[in-house]
Image 1 (cartoon, rainbow, N blue to C red):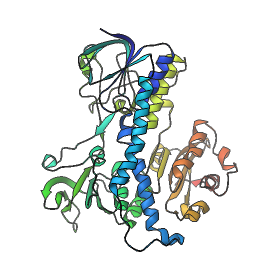
Image 2: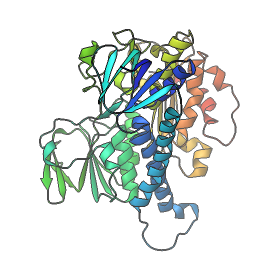
Image 3: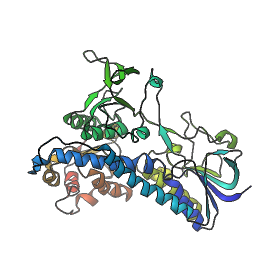
Length: 460
């Protein structure tokens, strides 16, 4: 039985970096990946979708060329989806191959291809191999959730993964789910030339955001010709001559169904923990299958850790990488970092992007503590006007007593980068005046953040 200092399962964002640190510390590592190196982010998440978002942005700019004084040759603009996919796949392959070559090139790391499952708390079966280790690190990620909708198994539905394999442009893409995945794909394919309908059970899109954010996103999508159906119930799927019919119980006056050529299910994620044999190792999970961990990513079995999407502590590449940093800091650096130290932060890569940190306005109100708020329309940001991309707004929240930043929602061009001005001040535990008195470069989007914070008013 091969014995190692550590076994790492899954080559997503956290695992390879941890393997490198353990190897540098002189440990032997067994690395197991059953499918594609790089995990969700590289293969079916951030990298491929943001590459396609870039193509969709180029399409949108071409459609708007006349607004900038650029006259294109007459004739309709078309999308060569095969070339879009080829560009995307080349970027993905470079990243994926880089991860695999990095791991295989380290003499302290032995790579195994196959599906791993526990046979005990210290041993794992990988195809015909039984591996043993003092510590085990699970970095198995997640996959698209398939809801138990009536008729779901009667139609050829798509997920965020299978949609990437399409080499034809959907004539009419119907998306079930009005949150991040649905919105990004919806705007993307609309710009490529597909008709798009988004169906959402909640009364508004991205319902975990503030109402003004949801309303602004809805307005942006509708202005691009995307149909959005909200507040629907009892969603069902059925075959249709056009492809698929999505039936709903909806408010009076709306059609009871929408027919499209393709349907995308974008209703959340589920962890890849069902076949790990966690019961044989005594590892606990919650009722959704996420592995239960403490503030250091350690499971209830002290030598077994869970990092990334499978531990339910974050659903982002940056939180997965931070899990690696936390584990490495505690095990190798005598640095007691923990999950609860990190500030919630994420972005939605529609155009313009939404960037979010800390508390929402609604959450700030629910604390009952006095707070300050400031908002500024992107139409008052010179850089946005110059670029012809002035949709959206900025909003920041501050604790009225401590003067510390509570959170922010920035929806606008460049806001996925500009948000870090505020995030870093929060990590520094400094008052908002640290940035409100700063002098930023003109013309940038970030230069309006000090001005934004100079206009704080009581949150009523």
